[in-house]
Picture 1 (cartoon, rainbow, N blue to C red):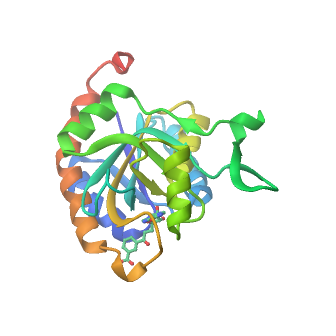
Picture 2 (cartoon, protein in one colour; picture 1 turned 60 degrees about the horizontal axis):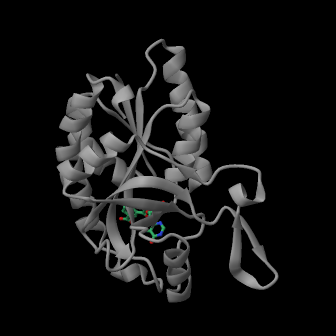
Length: 226
Ligand SMILES: O=C(O)c1cccc(C(=O)CC[C@H]2O[C@@H](n3cnc4c(=O)[nH]cnc43)[C@H](O)[C@@H]2O)c1
């Protein structure tokens, strides 16, 4: 069963490819943000299907912001839920109450990875398992971090592509999806100089070194177990 890993930028792709390329797992840098991720993931899935050997699993991966204290810098988060955290509508009163598109009645804001596989991947990687948020605007204030943590109890991390990858996987025949994030910075007041890119990319490489054997095993399992 062919597997596709989708990252935002080439540095993330290269960090993941160290472990994935020897196992024959394809890695694509699809660009930053949910729209680029969705568009390029859909093209990759459809091209592969047209070739007669479709992808059986797609993984959104890269660095991300971590919610304190659950996901410190250098740790790894695996998504139990992939949540579109800012897809909806504010009211004239401000950011709260926020109505998600599912509450508005025209779409979904959550994709669920296969439960058994995401648990096995988190255990193998020594990662936390919990909701991972997708945002179109990276959080830059303590207020917004608190708001997101309040709206999404237990959220581990935020990044900008997971929900887009998951939407593409759903649209292309319901391909199962995972999300794996290595934490480069805390979600909160923006301080790009404090982001620990190298530490997070090293953590991503190490995590995929442990995750790839799990994916290899899953290729041989009956996916209905999940
Ligand atoms: O400049 C570099 O060396 C470098 C190396 C690896 C990755 C980058 C990126 O800029 C990746 C952007 C990507 O990271 C995710 N991300 C990371 N932290 C956050 C956050 O706090 N909130 C939202 N997203 C975050 C996101 O998925 C971006 O697309 C640079």
